[in-house]
Image (cartoon, rainbow, N blue to C red):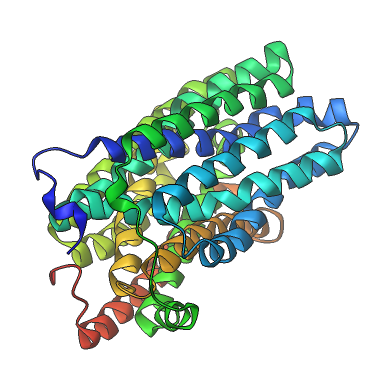
Length: 402
């Protein structure tokens, strides 16, 4: 029996909010570099394009680190693993703050990223266990709220700190968040989660390569590729297509971040009620919204409104996709599949940015980017549907049919 079933169903366990704190710190360190590219490139004497590769390097670290570190820590008690992962994250940010060269900063970013996927993967399993069967997706959403709040609050504040006091000050600030998160996790996460996985690595890998799991991971990659096809280029879209002044970008992105928070919690709540329907519905909503955004983006006021709606649709997909992959790997490979799905989100980020660049440079251009992105969740829909049909034959037990 899972320890989560002893928890009251009416309230989210405090330990879930401890994981939210860790997710907040990780979210800030992942995204804040976007606002500091000019400062970093000037200080380390590299081009802005080279500084931008610090984002790609981080994503690569997540993709590599998620499965590797999950397998390496599989026999550790989960609380110990979470604390250790936050410690790695904190050390990585110290290394970023003291880096004296571009190469050192890249290595430090990759070190920090290695802990990212496994923390979210193991943390999602722990949060779902603690919340109980009826609130698993909601618990995942609450944990991921840390990531959305990092976008809304942490990144703007971190960017302001970096511009006012130097980019290294931002990483020292994130280091302090890491230290606080370690203390909060140690304090609030109960010993009841301190149980290592007893299955062997081959069983975990066999669970990971189940057709329903692989199709679920593919759905995640495609779903989030659509999001980052547009989000990566949101600033030029708003200035060159919508005609907004540059000073309006930051307030508009705050609206996008608010949409992330609302969509994330809404997606978790809906997924707890009807998981399969929520996965498919979120993909359709994302496709329709992106197609409509292609027309709305030409009007400044409509563009601002649709950026907020886009944020809602973008992150509403996250809890159901995470819960779906976990549900099909329950037992032998839940932690590994959960971590690999985090890597799949990051792979989708990279794929989306690349596809968006192709559309802009070699395709119909920036003005039709949202319409081109709308095709991706349309492609993801039959992949998700096939995953569900395969899963129905396997009769997954962790979630009721919906």
